[in-house]
Length: 120
Image 1 (tube, one colour):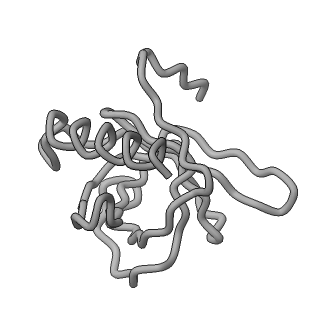
Image 2: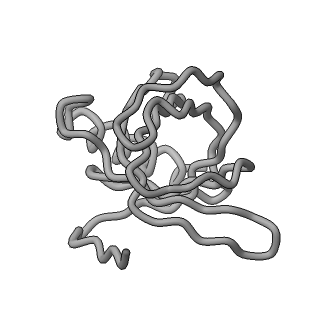
């Protein structure tokens, strides 16, 4: 599946920020898994690029992610839309489920974080 995002805004974390993820469903079947560590490479109001150590089938997979931005805990769920391997690392693109978060609040936190990073 080729996925071309249609967004005008994407914030790249330099360095990436850490968080946790959990695989919730594969092919619409709920599974039992534990939270594992991941890194967020970039984020937009509608999705994110993640680096995850686990190489899993990405098609039709729902994951939950959690991380802190500006000392605020953020929890999102989404569908994996692409997977790429590079130099022994595995990257996934996820599209956030619209009912799992407030796009306005997420954008506000990203902008706040960006301003804070420019000051440092």
